[in-house]
Length: 170
Image 1 (spheres, rainbow, N blue to C red):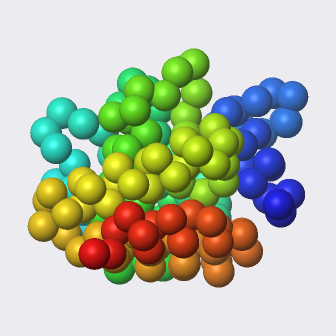
Image 2 (image 1 turned 120 degrees about the vertical axis):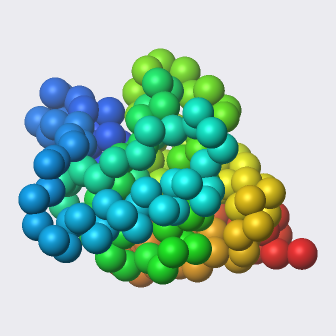
């Protein structure tokens, strides 16, 4: 397993031992970020059931999305930039999968990395595929999203991609 997911687990948990702060929301004054926020809002409106998740951009660098048990979902501008609308919906659906599972401990979970373990990530991917289908969005977007994350963040997401192929494409 690559070292990056372990670092991201520190970032996601906001661990002071890792010396990295958790993602934070930014006001994003630029036109580019207004467009990103608009795309993110549209993806959330089409994907998330009412009352599930409060979505916003974060100014953290790199590819990432995080969900907290209190319903906050944060997405990086870089992730919005590399994903098409259906893939962005898939990233939000994955995070919603974590929220529906009620992750314990008050710590956020991430679409990139395996801070809570592979089983939790696979479960969130499956739940995300089901949510996409339920909302009329191509569940194959989950696979494409994971492939882009694997390439962009240089992660080995082979097991998650294979499991998503089985769960999302019928």
